[in-house]
Length: 425
Image (tube, rainbow, N blue to C red; front, side, top):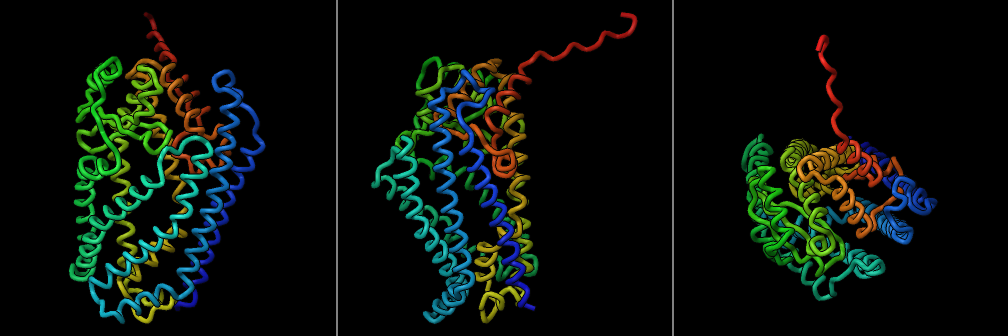
């Protein structure tokens, strides 16, 4: 029965690779042929910025191509070289069993993946981002970030692995439901832990200084009835020249602005960006995405509960016997090939949320020109792609292309049509 497992996996893996690489190449070809500023943006973006954006998009595309091919090669090598069953036997030969074998096996695989990603990470930061003037990190800071990240992952991940094993091993036939409930509790805990403990390990957060910007944002949040834990500026410029803003927290979130955004935008532009983020919160986009993430986790755990007791899976990839850690490793490495087609659905939902948040920002801040100006500024400063291929956009883009987004803002800023007068009035 296990004879058909590998061919089916390889077929799905080949389809995934063909679709994703094909879309990437299609987008790169489309961008390479595009010249100048798109007609709807004429006069709003300098030709020099458009050319740098095109060059940055192509450079990122070439990097993504190498990265995807490398990831595919590593995945196939790990799955079919016999490495996974060899590691299982090697750890067992050293006397590890039960929860210790489970945790050690998955930690070593995760650590190996982190090590393999180092060369590409170094190239992206110190070559690609450096070439276009975005990189501001130093080798020392880069290494420190990685070591801190590993420490945080170990502090959180290793206890989580032991807890996962305990649920899978001792919670009965419905362990996946109990484990899901545990993961929900962990997720809620992390929503508190991240802004209060983890994020400050990597960045400094200072209250937004008194002044016109703070006054405008405080009034904006008050008008929206948006209860928050304060306005903060993050020292993003230590690592990158990119600009952004985000919320952290679920019930009363912190508002975090990149220092690069504060430095480069005027008051109305920054207020429009914040109004957009408030729109996400007021429309419950964050809560919906969290709920969707939890539903996905539940589905994965259900599938895992069926795979751990399915002998053909282990035999197909060289294991002598079923093992909980082996099932998780195989699902992590090969599961994406069976669900990759869900990516455009998630991207479509995200783009709709962006349009909704823009409409809310126009109503709240009452400055559609400032919102458009902010988006144009962010697009130019981040060298976002001005000429994405529609198919690539549909599959990957979580934000609408700039041209479409500006047109939607113009439509939402138009006055509502007057209702027809009743007959006889």
